[in-house]
Amino acid sequence: MSDLFTIFVDNLLPIFLAAGAGYILTRVSGLNPRPISQVIFYIFSPCLIFSLLTQSQLSNDDILRGSAYAFAIIICVGILTWIVGRMFHLNRRTMAGVLIASMFMNAGNFGLPVVLFAFGEKALRYASLFFVVNAVAAYTVGVIIASMGSVRLRKALLNLLKIPTVYALLLALIFMRSDWEIPLPLERTTTLLGNASIPAMLVLLGMQLSKANLAGRRTPIAIASVMRLVASPIIALLLGQALGFSGSARQAMTLESAMPTAVLTTVLSTEYDASPSMVTSIVVVTTLLSPLTLTPLLALLGA
Image (cartoon, rainbow, N blue to C red):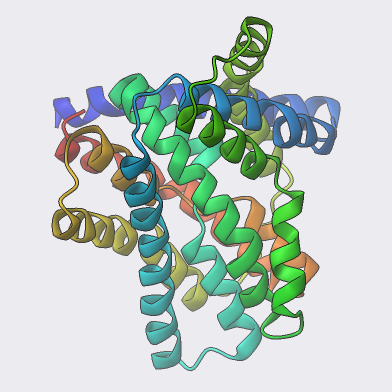
């Protein structure tokens, strides 16, 4: 028990303390989190992805296999959630909200710093790859699910053009596949801005949670919480073993898969009327409950 407490204090408590600072700031000052969110989304996160990938030792095969692994986890969680939702006779709108809340995790604000604290820079490279795959899937598959057919596939795919991290990934791949040397000013700029990403994400997480509403229905919230915090990491462990992943890749991907529901899902559910109050409740509940599942998982993964 003392080992689990040490794991929590060393790896998870700093996350909640940093998020708590953002929560208190917003409660006291009424500061709007949207401008900070936009700076992170358009500047800090893309720079973090670019610098981590270009400075990493990930091969093209690592990137392809890691991306396929991450996407497979998301899809498997969605299929299992749909089966359970059908068993509980969830209506169409509720099912849409439960699906996006179960499938898409907080791989950025929460996941990246936890992976960094627990397993270091090498694992963070794989976690960053997971973060990009999760974002791309959320803006395509997530939009389609949230709208439940009210938006065309073409429009969903065009949403990819709005994700700066996708461009950062593509640019990083160009440099990685070629013999080009990154200009020193570009390398230093992206590294500097990327380093600001994780602390800013944690403060933003607290600011966003301060705006959350706990109203919602118990059964859908329970289903999504179990799928997100319990079923997802189990699926990741089984898939990782089947696909032959080990070491930092297995640690990062499994840990990212166990993160609470992404705050982004509240945006999707509001935009497409997929039970937004329920989805917001799931974000809060899974975030608050996550130490109970992440702490033993960290011990299992060797933190």
